[in-house]
Amino acid sequence: MSGYGEQDHVRIERDGNVVRVTLCNPAARNAQTPATWRRLASVPDLLDEQVRAVVVAGEGRGFSAGLDRRMLTPEGVPGEESILTLAGQDASRMEPFIAQAQAAFTWWRTVPQVTIALVHGHAIGAGFQLALACDVMVVADDALLAMRETSLGLVPDLGGTQPLANRVGYSRAFEICARGRFVAADEAVRLGIAIEQVPAPQWDAWLAEFLDPIVAAMPNAVGELKGLLNGAAAAADQPARERAAQLRRLAELRTLLGG
Image 1 (cartoon, helix red, strand yellow):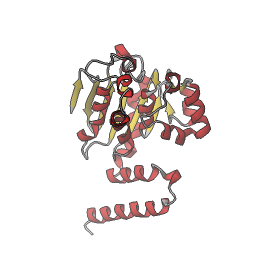
Image 2 (tube, one colour):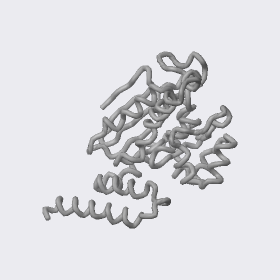
Image 3 (cartoon, helix red, strand yellow):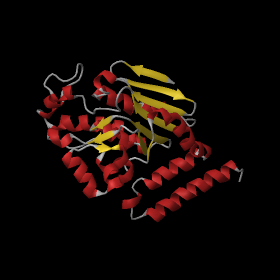
Image 4 (cartoon, one colour):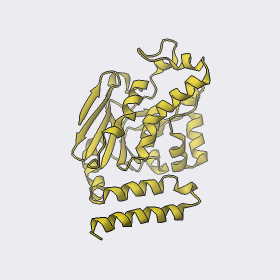
């Protein structure tokens, strides 16, 4: 599997049982456009049962500077209608636009594969939300994360508010978003936004060690675990969800064992 879109600036490559997604427009600090989001939303269609992990990273000096600011000008991005133009029309056009953008961010926690964001340099706005969309985030020593939407008179709307609040709590999530300040690598780990701080040159070794026990486990067990943990804190019926998941696991094991 390989692919690169000149307009969307997303490269997708398969490395054994790992799919690597790379934002590759370093000249624009990997700024995101609707074409980027359409390409990211298509990744699940490329996954099969042999794929055990999806890793996303950014090329160049940083992960992603977020939304391409040209989308907030009347001219917009070539081939795309600007957000300002859409906002001046009926909400029935703007809402589907946002929903389509969100589709690039929501699947990372619902696919059975483990999803990992490797973040170096700046991850701002949509970049921060893309990293938050993954099951786990790892930050390089130079990582700087920020939600800058309020400085533009906007709010984060690409699915990042829930995972951020889940990881750090309401008050800290509010402070980070409302102030639009940068969170450095060590603080990101301390707050639980990222699970570990790893120098970028060591990412491949870290990935191999991290994924080894996950790949050794049965794929459907990992997928069921993701489903259980997502929303677990707010699920009043969590014991029932656990029972249902376990029954599915036992049924598969019995089939595999010839029972």
